[in-house]
Image (cartoon, rainbow, N blue to C red; front, side, top):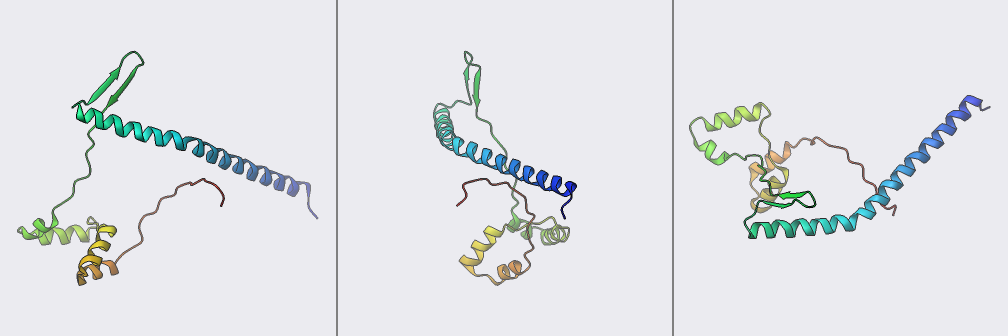
Length: 145
């Protein structure tokens, strides 16, 4: 026999599920509406950047409408010349010490390409020691197919 309390919990669960479905539908609708605008924005951004580069401009100001567009240089993360490192005095020791401390990472895509292109045995050995990567979570909302 179902108690009033159990019926109340079931009603709340159904209401919560309906609310979640409404949120997902709203996100899907907004995503669909934004697609043409995102495509247009990307084309405009590409064109503006190209024209600014051709004009040797780093800033465009429209004071009347209160708009400024700036080209910003963004530094990437440095890479390290490991072949030169291991050729230097104590370079191999430094690389091994860094690896033992968990500070050396090998790019899986690059290793995969190298293994495919050259088939080096050491690349196979490295691949055999692969560990699962740190995952992230993403919410994807789209059409039910």
